[in-house]
Length: 255
Image (cartoon, rainbow, N blue to C red):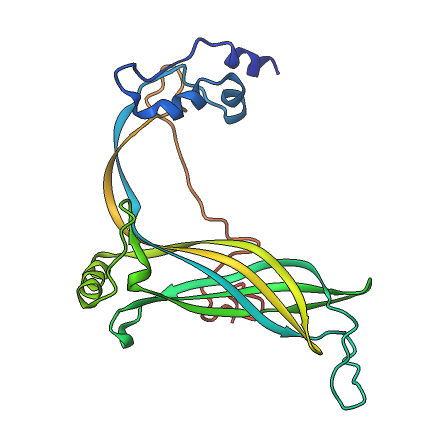
């Protein structure tokens, strides 16, 4: 506790009045509580131009989706008088997660879209003692005219000229990433059927390996230090959202 107090009480300076580019970062860097929480050691930093290699997003497609999947209405499959299942009411939702996600190019259709595929795992609850697992999958296209350039927000035109521009863009694109926002997971009854519905939003981003100059702070070097040692590692244990191809029985990459 004493060490944290000493760090908090240091007279901290950040940036320069002549360079407002790092104002938001300076507000974080100079805040005593956040300095202690984030372990910042440096007492004075300047807003400097840094040369970094990054995945620079160039085009974004936003899609709103509802994935549907028929599920048992009851655990024992009890039949009615004419052989249909009798629902005891829709099962509840115990939990859910994204099992896998991927996107790929479309050379067979003239490179006019990005094909997205996601698989979910939903645990259904029947009464108080029965659980069931379903793994619905949803596939959809982001067509060229659904992509907006970043940062202008201007979409590719829905015509041949726009398609050709998108094809030229794909020639420079190195990869993609997506943001998945699960908005609602529910089971509804339609007649004697129970249907799992997953409302979700996907922000599909195309990026290019790029070298950029950015204004940024280096918050960690201490007094007398030239720099710090930063090591990154991708976690290999636990749940990983991997491509859906050969994702295995449980979506963990084991075939």
